[in-house]
Every structure is written in structure tokens, then in C-alpha cells.
Image (cartoon, rainbow, N blue to C red; front, side, top):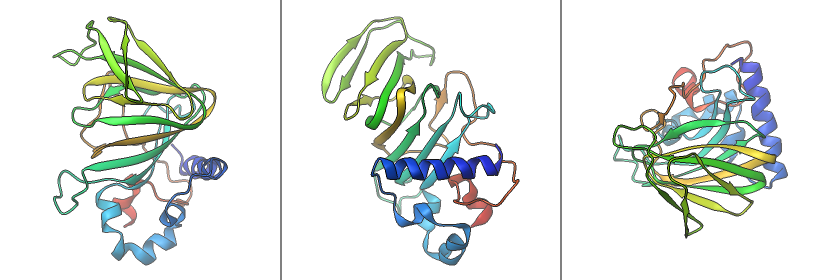
Length: 226
């Protein structure tokens, strides 16, 4: 992805967040010079990959398959000094923009429709070989059990205010319908480097063509700029 496109997408995301009255921490708006001035004080942000995270899953078609995220808080399984056992993200899901089918080996998460359109989530159990299982599937929508048809891709539609709990090893993919969605994620500690199992292998962080300076840093920029 070109850096100019990433910068434009982050600006659009900031506008959408303001429209939805969702406030980021002040450093969510820092420019590169702000990071450089304060980099001696931001080690937890860097170590735990807090902040802007934008991906096209290495497929080069962000509008069709991509996601904008901001990690607000997180622990770190590899660094006991960070004792948080939880994580929180906010995500912007565009209409018919897919996050591809995947599960997490360790992370349990609630996905919440915080506002906007309908969040469509498609689910499939995995078997012991991490393939698609034909066993029945039961999930909880805001604490209420729902049993879904076995042996097929099950669909849940979350309206604003609704949420679903996703257990480890539960394949899921999602996209928005009827309008852009502000989606929340509340979970156990998040590890995007080692805890994503995509059913069809894709990339997690984008390859970036540096055609201009970054406006806001992405989590995968920290090692380069800080």
C-alpha cells in the first residue's frame, strides 16, 4: 500500500470516529514529530503494539479486503512486566469490505457493533486439523445462546449495540452492510504477530511504499521510526 493512501485512510477514520463521538487517546493524533519528542516515554505503546493498525492482508485491494483498527489497550504475553490480561480495539469496517476467515489459537474476544450499519459475521467451527468442521455450532449473542446449523457457513447479523463472543478455534469473517460500522473488540491479550490462523493464508501487516511521510504512525512503523 502507498503511504499516501494510508495517510488518507487514517484521516477518513479520524473523521468517522468524531462523527460517532468515539474519542481516541491524545497520542492517537500525534504526528511524527510528536512521537520523536516523546519516544522515551512510550515504551508500553511500542511493546504492546497500541495504536493505528491498517491492513490489506497483503492482497493489494483494501476496499474489497481490508480493515482499519486502533488498539487502545493490551497486555503482552512475552513481557511479564505488562500485567494486563485484556485488550481493547476499535475497528472501522466498510460496506462489503471483508476481513477474511480466521481464528485465534488463544484469544477469546467479544465483537461489538458500536454504531453505524449492520455487522455481518460468518462463522464456522474448526476440527482437530484446523479445517472446517461439520459439527453443530453454538455461540452467545449478548449472553444468550444461539445454535447454528451444522456443516455450513453460519451467519450472524449484529445491529448497533449487539455483540457476539468468539471462542478460540472458531473461524470467523466479517463485513458491513447498510453503512460503515464502528466495531469494538474486547478480548484477552491480543498477539497479532503469532495468534492469527487464516483459513486461506494471507499477510497480516501491509507492505508499504513510502511515497510520502507518515501522518500518524502504524504499529508496524514503530521499529523503523522509534
